[in-house]
Image 1: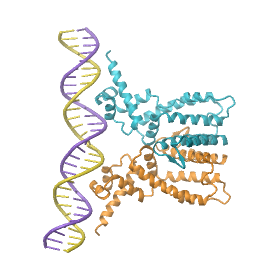
Image 2: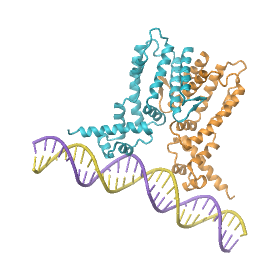
Image 3: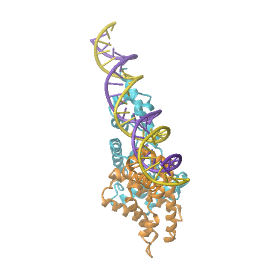
Image 4: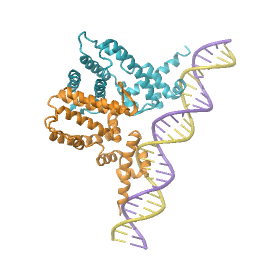
Amino acid sequence: MESSKKEKTKQKIIEAVGSIIAESGFQNLGINAIAREAGVDKVLIYRYFTDLPTLLRQFALQSNYWPSLAEFVEHSPAQPNETPASLASKVLINLLHELQKRPMTQEIIKWELLEKNELTEELDKARKEMIREGLESMKELAPGMMPPRDKKFLAVHAIVCAGLVHLLLHSKNKEEFMGLNLKTKEDWQYVEEGVKLIFESL
Amino acid sequence: MESSKKEKTKQKIIEAVGSIIAESGFQNLGINAIAREAGVDKVLIYRYFTDLPTLLRQFALQSNYWPSLAEFVEHSPAQPNETPASLASKVLINLLHELQKRPMTQEIIKWELLEKNELTEELDKARKEMIREGLESMKELAPGMMPPRDKKFLAVHAIVCAGLVHLLLHSKNKEEFMGLNLKTKEDWQYVEEGVKLIFESL
DNA sequence: CGATAAAGTCACCAAGTGGTGACAGAATCC
DNA sequence: GGATTCTGTCACCACTTGGTGACTTTATCG
């Protein structure tokens, strides 16, 4: 049992990173905070991970912080006669639901929004890889729809997706956005219907 | 000239706040940083503003950090026979252009996105007031369109607006979003056409 | 002029940050 | 057994942060 103890504390450290991000975001993500949360001396962090960036990389690799696109596409399988519009709105709304469940992912999106450093680069690389995989599986499930042939349509997808993300992040600290009360399920329902309306109208 | 010197240094301090936010965001917005930027001893900040929150309030009041909705609505006056759809996309695209010009505003939006404290509350209050005024003037300019009679339509407006904001913020640190290259004017053009497409289709 | 009130400077405090070197205890290997 | 390697603890460093009291300088007013 030479290194099992070491492995154990390494694990504790990595888990502490996740806890801190989920609880209080990345603002307090420092050596001292991680050591405190893990109940471990900070010198061990340096010994086992040498760096905070390499610790973050380790964390990004093992914690699947990004919802697997393949997974939630399967959650809403394409019906035989389903229109591309219906499928598109279903996928985006599903993405919204998955993101709503993942506070840690929301924090990371915020982080990447406002800082560009070696830490966020690591997270970005991991996320892009997962998205690439997800798109592959979407091409199989809905070959006619992906990718949109016209860049205008692609832009519409991007606007709606970005809009949902922003509304979600916004709703964490504020309850109102342009007359919608994002603390109520009712108005989120209107948002989902708005998404459907957009794609049906196309 | 008893208090002109005092007024002058007060002004320097307030301007320093704006400079720091525009340059490096709100992350480094502290007493020491402000004093350093203004070339002033920090004790003066406490003497003149007593608090950092009150300093922020002062700053928010005098610097019109939020684009005046009334102003840019006038930039794109409604044509006589203009459809509500055309007007809606024009207004939102105009809002996008105004935000693109205001790095400080972008920073503040980010800030409100990820922190909720007395400082952001002050900024929030100031912004809501300006938006309220803007909506008033929009009701006059386009009485048939504002506010949307159906909440679904309101939600569409919110999604598109939020989407544009998110794409803008995202483009600062990343160049790609769902296949769009947001560092190129070309793909931003597609985004604008996507907005028009959405509203025309409704 | 001299007295008073304001403007600005300086030194200091406690607390927190990232980071390192020296040490004790235990496990390993010969 | 003994020597060495590894895990973990502790004390410490330099630096930054927010915040305050004591001081000097300057200007105002009578």
